[in-house]
Image (cartoon, rainbow, N blue to C red; front, side, top):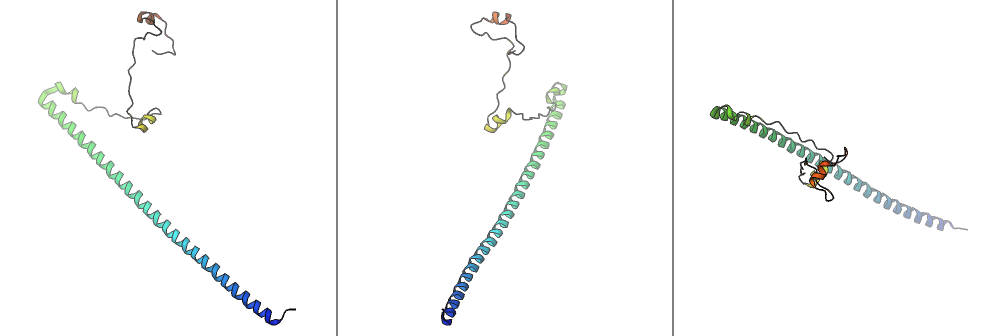
Length: 153
């Protein structure tokens, strides 16, 4: 059926094609491996840069906090000096005016979140003790009307 020469030629061609195909696959894999190694090195470099940046940010905020603490202490020293000088020069008449103010602690609540996010200052409204006339009532009629417990004061 087949001659030995044909079998040898087909075997040699198959070996050449197999070797060439194996070389091609190995080359593609080596390029992919090199690319993976390059990406891993780039990732480690980026992680190092981010770590360095975080450390710098932490250091900057720490330094800012230290300077604010120093500024607060300086203002307290200045206030004490002014209070001492005023009491020495003006007597006890200015004593209550120069007492250290109570520290104001501004604790945000749920309603302040929206205004602070927009950068707007919340507006405080004082309550009115007199009832306002409604629906054409006079002030006297509004005062005589019974107040509801759940209504406005």
